[in-house]
Length: 330
Image (tube, rainbow, N blue to C red; front, top):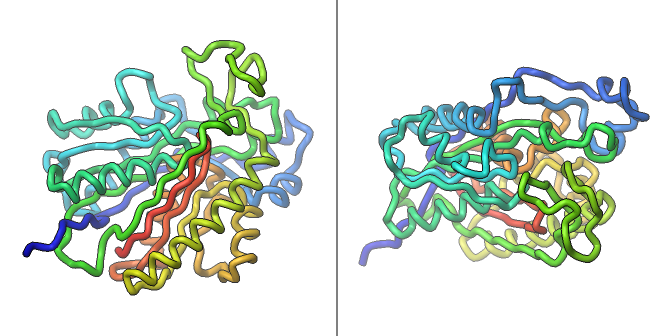
C-alpha cells in the first residue's frame, strides 16, 4: 500500500521595504518616546512600504526568493494562496496579481483573510491540496502594508505595525519523518470587535453592539488582545508538545507571530522555554500580521537556527479572532 502523500516546505523567502522607521520618528508627532515603545512592545524600528510598494509587489519579491530556494520555476507552480488583510484591491485578489507578476500561467490563485493567522491558514489550504494530490508545487504568501491602515494619531496602535512579505513553496515528500505533521486552526467571531481593519465597503458607523462608530483605520483593544494572545500561545505550544509525542519528534524552534515581546516572554516564562528556542525579530520589523510568521521562519532558516530534519512550531493569533499552529519537520 502506498503511503499517504505528505507536504513539506521546499523553500522560503521574504522581503522588507527599504524605509526604516525608528521609534524616535513617532515622538515628533505623538506623546511617546523610544523608551516608552521599547519597554512596552520590544519594538525598536519597523519598515514602511514606499510609494511603489504594495502587498502584491512585496509578495512577489518574497515569492521569487522562495521559488529560488526551492529550485522551482514559476511555470511549475500549480496554486497560489495568499494571506493578507491589506490587499491591493478587493478584486482582483492579491494572489491573482502575484500570479500575473510571476507569469505562472492560468493556475488557481486566491486570498485567505485571517489577519495575523493568515499565513498559517493559507498553509493549511496548500497542505490539503498537496495531500490530495491535486497540486505538487504550491506557493504560500503572507504580505501586508499595515502602514496604510494605521491611525497615526493613536500611539497605542500605530507604533506596533510594519510592512513586509514572506513566502514558502510547499510540495510532496515520500519521507514520513519530514513535512507538515499537524495544523490546527481556530476562530471566534463573537470577539470580532477586539481587532478590526475596515474597507471601503464597511458601513460607517458599522452595525453591531460593542462596535465603535467612525471606523476608518485599524482598531485594536490592546489589553484584551494581550490576554487572549498569551493564553492561546501557551495552549498551542502545549498542544504541539502532545502532537510531537505522537510522531516521535521534539520541537527545536518555535516561530511565533511577532506581536509584542511581553506576550512572547510571558508565555515562555510560564512554560519554562529558553529564549534561544524561539525566533524573535519584531525589534526590527514590528507586527507585520500575515507576513510575520513566514518572515521570521525565513530568517530562522537563513541564519542557521533551523534546517533539514529539525521540527519547528509555527504559531499565530490575530483578528477574527483567529489562532493557529503548524507543526512541521523541515
